[in-house]
Image 1 (cartoon, rainbow, N blue to C red):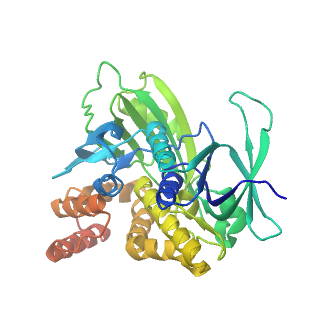
Image 2 (cartoon, rainbow, N blue to C red):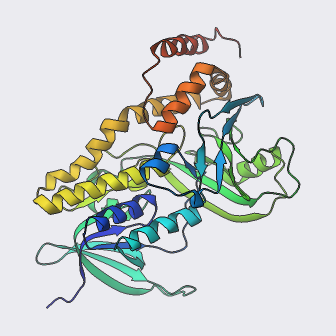
Image 3 (cartoon, rainbow, N blue to C red):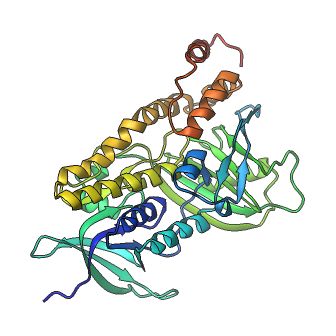
Length: 401
């Protein structure tokens, strides 16, 4: 007799997507194992829009800062300051925030296990067997092998997901931006122009040939980072240049983190049987902005809902609803942002014009309203018309920068 533990669902990966999926399913009464590796923190600016705070009941205790404005810096060092009206963007430290999400999942009934996922096989009865290795902190061996059985698996193990590569045919069909940031302590003597409630976004080719650099407030610390799909571009040198430009070269560095970010959602998130993806594993990082926390948590919820329906009905087609629901509500936003990144981020001349466009009051209001509520704003048709003609003027070189 096989005495291996059996769960309704094994969730591989304990970031915002996986922890949210585990919490959702455990709250519905399913037996859930949350399998997560220790010590990995994703490089992330840490922005949480109001909708995420509202939808997922994120307490004030998790917000290390509240951003009330954003500054865009052009290649010519022209600053465009944008107030965040009637609200704020919450900032979290992923080291603390991800653990809080995992604890919340455990409080709802999920079993936590710190281990490294190895592979998925099938038992004779057709059920998934998830193989993993546990390793004591500081140990140099390969770890102690373990395994569990699961009726369903949610792969939330990040970009280049091992679960996806083993179970989803199209998992290799994507490109990545590589992100790197340094968490630094805010210096006692603040640099000139420092504002702990402002997110700074730098659009300069020397900091990224196809993305942007950022300085985001985290209370007593800052996230200073950049990203690029150009493998030959030195992200560390770019961050050093950004720290020098912002007067933060001598600030103490607390930790350094790097990871790939997917550039678009995968064409398929499930294997048509018993596996579904969520978060970075499914490719849900917003182009142009790199925003991922809200979309990861939403993806975790949708994956959990799809698995719950499949367990209840036995209809494996319900697994595909996770992607269908996501793309129905956010596919158009991802498409627009993808086009914007490819066009505006390709040269400093276009970056200069892009930042200039963002001086426009209509652009600022519609952009932040859409960002805060995670939906394209349609209630101001004349503003959209004005923006269209202003964009055309910039595209044709008729507008002054």
